[in-house]
Image 1 (tube, rainbow, N blue to C red):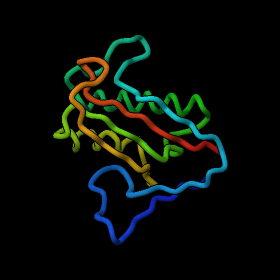
Image 2 (cartoon, helix red, strand yellow; image 1 turned 90 degrees about the vertical axis):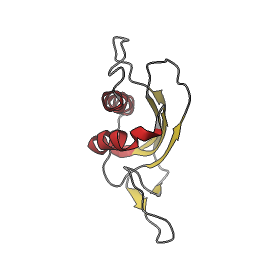
Image 3 (cartoon, rainbow, N blue to C red; image 1 turned 180 degrees about the vertical axis):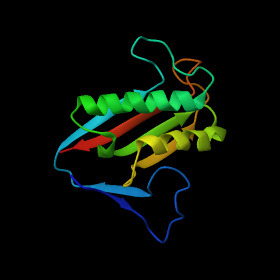
Image 4 (cartoon, rainbow, N blue to C red; image 1 turned 180 degrees about the horizontal axis):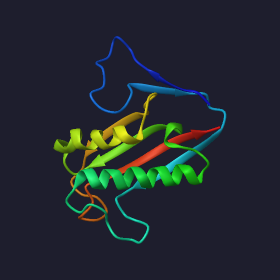
Length: 131
């Protein structure tokens, strides 16, 4: 199922690993991935104090959930990212670039004061469409 990254001349180009908007034909299965954190399968938290390592683990967790539904990260059309410190934007996108490729998903990133555990620095939820 082709996903298309939209770019409008009326909008500023994104400065991260995301698109202004993403379109996808709605035929297929929608997969709604709950907010994933840096929790490893054994319950431990990856990268305590290291947003890059936590982002890597979060992306691995999103990937595992989408894979279980029969898809890949290329099927993700939207992500919502919650971070403890917006100053980590560049570090987060450096890692995201290893996982998400064009056409990129639409994305929102917001800074929050707390996440579910005090050691979490990032959480990502996702929507995928799988043919």
